[in-house]
Image (cartoon, rainbow, N blue to C red; front, side):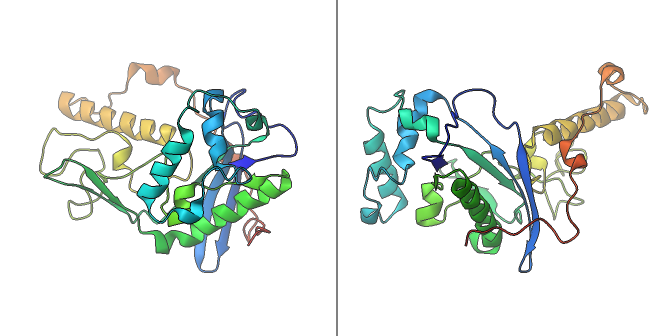
Length: 263
């Protein structure tokens, strides 16, 4: 979030994710690839999100030591602000960053509580997160504003994701994942997983088209197998038009994109 921008941004008006900037560069020994996109939010969240405006200092982070303390402080500070607007939102820009991390986290299900335990391996991915922070800071500086990172990351180095992938990975064998290339669960014939959990790596972009394409491919493969019609295609395939991927028109310099200014 970029607060106090020089010109009005008005994140509550119009569509979101209308443009993006690709960062493709080797920083040190780490191959960084991510997209910075424009975002937005409903105006009714304006007052709550302005709690993150660094110039407001609405609660003393110096007194916050743990994640639970921060969450409690944020809930207390946001009491009465839900569904309230704030004029400062007009000069607040929201950006989203989607990168290709190492896909080395873990998701485990506690058998006793039925709750998920997600463990991020942060240190190996720090070069990616730092590059994202630096480019976001460059944008905030160019807009005359202040960059406000996710406070859970800024205070505790806990990353966040809105497009979680993986969990039931497709792989060449049961030793490497949960499903085969067609989404069928190993050792459970007829049980298929067809959502984003079977993607083994981060796409680095909004993944809906990739998820849908993999699901459609797997469904067609299953129908061919069960009907024994080897060349079966969905009737709608005749009317399908190829999606023009804007990334295909991007030319990345041989040495990668320009480095960031922020440090």
